[in-house]
Image (cartoon, rainbow, N blue to C red; front, side, top):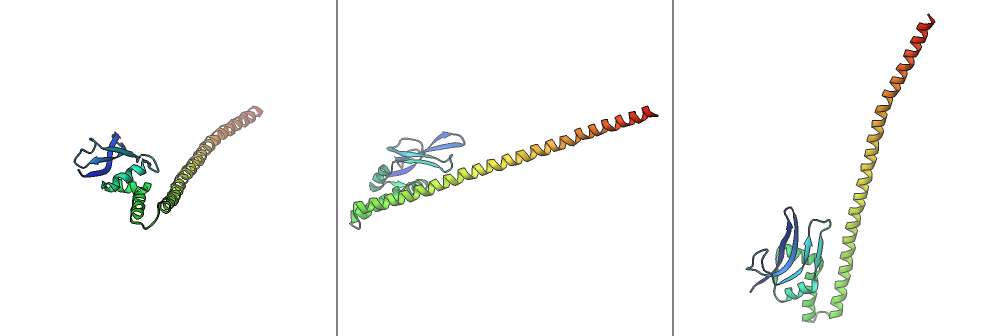
Length: 171
Protein backbone atom coordinates (compact mmCIF):
# COMPACT_ATOMS: atom_id res chain seq x y z
CA UNK A 1 0.00 0.00 0.00
CA UNK A 2 1.89 3.12 -1.19
CA UNK A 3 1.37 5.99 1.21
CA UNK A 4 1.50 9.65 0.21
CA UNK A 5 1.69 12.74 2.36
CA UNK A 6 -0.63 15.15 0.60
CA UNK A 7 -3.10 17.98 1.02
CA UNK A 8 -6.80 17.42 1.55
CA UNK A 9 -8.92 20.43 0.59
CA UNK A 10 -11.49 21.91 2.93
CA UNK A 11 -13.02 25.37 3.23
CA UNK A 12 -15.43 27.15 0.93
CA UNK A 13 -15.21 28.22 -2.68
CA UNK A 14 -12.43 30.78 -3.13
CA UNK A 15 -11.20 30.31 0.47
CA UNK A 16 -9.27 27.03 0.54
CA UNK A 17 -8.08 25.44 3.76
CA UNK A 18 -6.05 22.26 3.63
CA UNK A 19 -5.34 19.37 5.95
CA UNK A 20 -1.94 17.73 5.61
CA UNK A 21 -2.62 14.00 5.72
CA UNK A 22 -0.92 10.67 5.23
CA UNK A 23 -3.20 8.73 2.87
CA UNK A 24 -3.22 5.70 0.63
CA UNK A 25 -2.31 6.91 -2.85
CA UNK A 26 -5.37 5.14 -4.28
CA UNK A 27 -7.77 7.08 -2.03
CA UNK A 28 -9.68 10.12 -3.30
CA UNK A 29 -8.19 13.55 -2.74
CA UNK A 30 -10.71 14.43 -0.03
CA UNK A 31 -11.45 10.84 0.92
CA UNK A 32 -10.21 8.44 3.55
CA UNK A 33 -6.83 9.13 5.15
CA UNK A 34 -4.60 7.25 7.57
CA UNK A 35 -3.50 10.14 9.80
CA UNK A 36 -3.96 13.89 9.93
CA UNK A 37 -0.54 15.51 10.32
CA UNK A 38 -1.49 19.19 10.30
CA UNK A 39 -3.26 22.06 8.59
CA UNK A 40 -2.33 24.68 6.00
CA UNK A 41 -4.15 27.99 5.51
CA UNK A 42 -2.90 29.90 2.43
CA UNK A 43 -5.42 32.72 2.98
CA UNK A 44 -3.29 34.46 5.60
CA UNK A 45 -0.06 36.35 4.95
CA UNK A 46 2.31 34.71 5.76
CA UNK A 47 0.50 31.40 5.31
CA UNK A 48 -0.46 29.62 8.53
CA UNK A 49 0.96 26.11 8.84
CA UNK A 50 0.37 23.79 11.78
CA UNK A 51 2.33 20.55 11.47
CA UNK A 52 3.15 17.59 13.67
CA UNK A 53 6.82 17.41 12.65
CA UNK A 54 7.54 14.18 14.53
CA UNK A 55 4.53 12.44 12.99
CA UNK A 56 5.55 13.58 9.52
CA UNK A 57 9.12 12.33 10.09
CA UNK A 58 7.77 8.96 11.23
CA UNK A 59 5.73 8.62 8.03
CA UNK A 60 8.72 9.69 5.92
CA UNK A 61 10.92 7.08 7.64
CA UNK A 62 8.29 4.44 6.89
CA UNK A 63 8.45 5.28 3.17
CA UNK A 64 5.64 7.77 2.64
CA UNK A 65 6.20 9.94 -0.42
CA UNK A 66 5.16 13.61 -0.14
CA UNK A 67 3.56 15.37 -3.09
CA UNK A 68 5.34 18.45 -4.43
CA UNK A 69 3.29 20.94 -2.41
CA UNK A 70 3.39 18.79 0.71
CA UNK A 71 7.16 18.43 0.32
CA UNK A 72 7.53 22.22 0.16
CA UNK A 73 5.44 22.59 3.32
CA UNK A 74 7.37 19.84 5.13
CA UNK A 75 10.63 21.48 4.11
CA UNK A 76 9.38 24.89 5.27
CA UNK A 77 8.50 23.54 8.71
CA UNK A 78 11.69 21.46 9.03
CA UNK A 79 10.31 17.93 8.77
CA UNK A 80 12.52 17.13 5.78
CA UNK A 81 15.60 18.42 7.63
CA UNK A 82 14.74 16.38 10.71
CA UNK A 83 14.28 13.30 8.50
CA UNK A 84 17.66 13.97 6.90
CA UNK A 85 19.33 14.39 10.29
CA UNK A 86 17.68 11.19 11.56
CA UNK A 87 19.22 9.36 8.58
CA UNK A 88 22.62 10.72 9.60
CA UNK A 89 22.11 9.47 13.15
CA UNK A 90 21.16 6.00 11.87
CA UNK A 91 24.33 5.88 9.77
CA UNK A 92 26.47 7.06 12.69
CA UNK A 93 27.59 10.32 11.07
CA UNK A 94 26.42 12.33 14.06
CA UNK A 95 24.87 11.80 17.46
CA UNK A 96 21.28 12.39 18.49
CA UNK A 97 22.30 15.47 20.51
CA UNK A 98 24.18 16.99 17.57
CA UNK A 99 21.20 16.41 15.28
CA UNK A 100 18.84 17.98 17.82
CA UNK A 101 21.17 20.98 18.23
CA UNK A 102 21.35 21.52 14.46
CA UNK A 103 17.58 21.23 14.12
CA UNK A 104 16.89 23.67 16.97
CA UNK A 105 19.37 26.20 15.53
CA UNK A 106 17.70 25.97 12.13
CA UNK A 107 14.26 26.25 13.73
CA UNK A 108 15.23 29.44 15.62
CA UNK A 109 16.65 30.97 12.45
CA UNK A 110 13.51 30.09 10.49
CA UNK A 111 11.25 31.50 13.20
CA UNK A 112 13.23 34.75 13.15
CA UNK A 113 12.81 35.01 9.35
CA UNK A 114 9.06 34.40 9.54
CA UNK A 115 8.69 36.92 12.36
CA UNK A 116 10.71 39.48 10.38
CA UNK A 117 8.39 39.02 7.40
CA UNK A 118 5.30 39.41 9.60
CA UNK A 119 6.77 42.55 11.19
CA UNK A 120 7.60 43.96 7.76
CA UNK A 121 4.06 43.31 6.54
CA UNK A 122 2.51 44.94 9.60
CA UNK A 123 4.88 47.93 9.23
CA UNK A 124 3.99 48.27 5.54
CA UNK A 125 0.30 48.07 6.42
CA UNK A 126 0.70 50.80 9.05
CA UNK A 127 2.58 53.00 6.55
CA UNK A 128 -0.14 52.47 3.94
CA UNK A 129 -2.80 53.48 6.46
CA UNK A 130 -0.79 56.59 7.41
CA UNK A 131 -0.44 57.59 3.73
CA UNK A 132 -4.15 57.03 3.16
CA UNK A 133 -4.94 59.23 6.18
CA UNK A 134 -2.64 61.99 4.89
CA UNK A 135 -4.26 61.80 1.45
CA UNK A 136 -7.71 61.98 3.02
CA UNK A 137 -6.68 65.00 5.09
CA UNK A 138 -5.34 66.69 1.94
CA UNK A 139 -8.61 66.03 0.11
CA UNK A 140 -10.63 67.39 3.03
CA UNK A 141 -8.47 70.52 3.24
CA UNK A 142 -8.82 71.04 -0.52
CA UNK A 143 -12.59 70.65 -0.22
CA UNK A 144 -12.71 73.16 2.64
CA UNK A 145 -10.46 75.56 0.72
CA UNK A 146 -12.65 75.26 -2.37
CA UNK A 147 -15.77 75.98 -0.32
CA UNK A 148 -14.25 78.91 1.61
CA UNK A 149 -13.64 81.36 -1.33
CA UNK A 150 -17.27 81.04 -2.38
CA UNK A 151 -18.34 82.34 1.02
CA UNK A 152 -15.81 85.18 0.83
CA UNK A 153 -17.09 86.20 -2.61
CA UNK A 154 -20.65 86.35 -1.31
CA UNK A 155 -19.48 88.51 1.59
CA UNK A 156 -17.54 90.71 -0.84
CA UNK A 157 -20.66 91.03 -3.02
CA UNK A 158 -22.75 91.93 0.01
CA UNK A 159 -20.24 94.62 0.95
CA UNK A 160 -20.23 95.94 -2.63
CA UNK A 161 -24.03 96.10 -2.72
CA UNK A 162 -24.05 97.87 0.65
CA UNK A 163 -21.58 100.45 -0.69
CA UNK A 164 -23.64 101.02 -3.84
CA UNK A 165 -26.83 101.42 -1.87
CA UNK A 166 -25.03 103.80 0.47
CA UNK A 167 -23.74 105.87 -2.46
CA UNK A 168 -27.22 105.85 -4.03
CA UNK A 169 -28.69 107.14 -0.80
CA UNK A 170 -26.14 109.95 -0.67
CA UNK A 171 -27.13 111.12 -4.13
